[in-house]
Image (cartoon, rainbow, N blue to C red; front, side, top):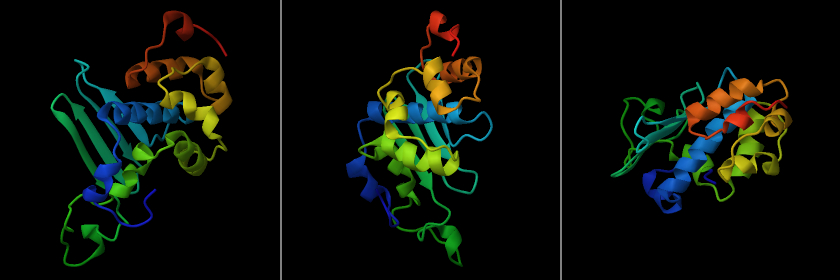
Length: 182
């Protein structure tokens, strides 16, 4: 979506409603949990009272974002270490006007078709798994994972492990579904 350095003023008009943003963060965390046990890009944490949550991405190379959801509103932070507006790219270091360096990293959350972005960029580039958007679209509609969906995306991933991850991420998994096998 963004192919140049952007700041928060560029991103704000494209942000979906907080509920949609929160659901997309949860979906990406769920899909990451299916693709890998070890190195996940996306995380989603629900607060103990359910009123607040955090969606985040960290690629381990200095690019990250955090989106905090709470009753009063939403807080976003993003940083792209290679962005031309990064204070680490110049000497002496100075913050760029707009402050939110790397807002283009939020593109996966605000894309009109997040399933396509996830399949084409995240699944294929980070997890090296050829994936079609229709194979991950269920996560972006709020549907829970199933043994069949998990096996289709990552046959090496154990369903029981995914059930635990799904619950941690905030997906409701019924007792009967949790005890299914692929």
